[in-house]
Image 1 (cartoon, helix red, strand yellow):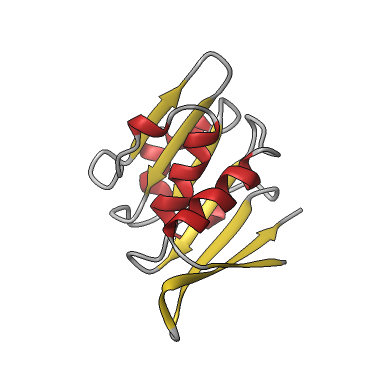
Image 2 (image 1 turned 180 degrees about the vertical axis):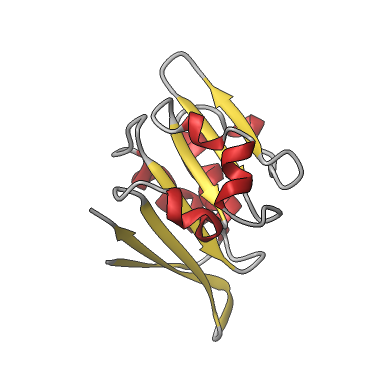
Length: 141
């Protein structure tokens, strides 16, 4: 597991951009953490690396937002409103796997159907600094 301490939103975005340099179209990333803990800012950083920063919006009500350019597709899911993995399968969510980078907020809800190589990133607010975030990354094999 890797830990990163982000000092503010700009730091989280920069960290995500650097992290995204090693991503490929088959990667699935689960972002976990309380509301306002940095999940969407992290996603913004990934989109910025691929020149898609002007398009970000939260997929809370649409479940998935699709971002594409000539080199990559990125699928940003928010599965908070789903009950379980069956709901995800019912909407065809698994059909996105392998077609592009999949970023899934609240992905622990659908954990039983996620492949073993999923990247898990947990965001926690720092109790001593309201702007800081503790970001833990776990690469599962």
